[in-house]
Length: 212
Image (cartoon, rainbow, N blue to C red; front, side, top):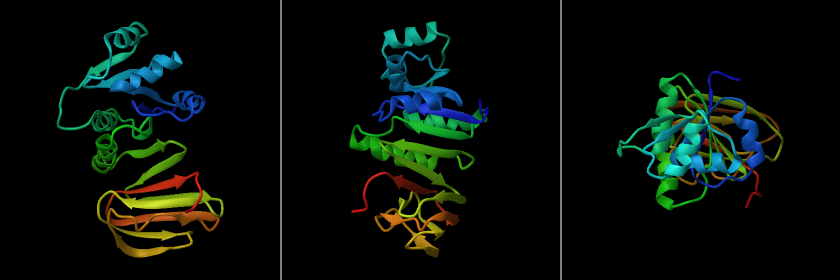
């Protein structure tokens, strides 16, 4: 098990339960508030339950605690449960964070996720599963090998100066904002390099769908 990795399971939609079970073997398994229901459905007790717990039933909490799950109740309403969970992971040195169950749900909750990613400590290496797509947060430098034609999009969670190479439409120290400008780029095949020179962070989304 990677002692730096944590898998945060939120209360949104799960697209692949088998993949989640695989991910949970690789790090600290954390139920973020109502995400505990996913663990119970899978009959897997998480290592930790964290949040204000307003979406956790007494029955689910009793089940988790009986199985040895630790509970950290954070009642503050100044930030979302996901934001609190990421801050706590940074505090305990779990700096490689994978987020599951973030897709679907209310529009305000979806926007709060992007806000939480923007505000999360820069020390965190964050990946987020969004249905069949994957989001990777970049605060400074991100390099990935990609097959030609892989669909990728860039979204500046905060205004940023970036360079992008290895894609059909490269960028060279260009200023980007939170807009649709970075939508639907394509990997050329080989390494794709994203550098954030100033500002940010930036979210790179790798999509499984067609480029339309």
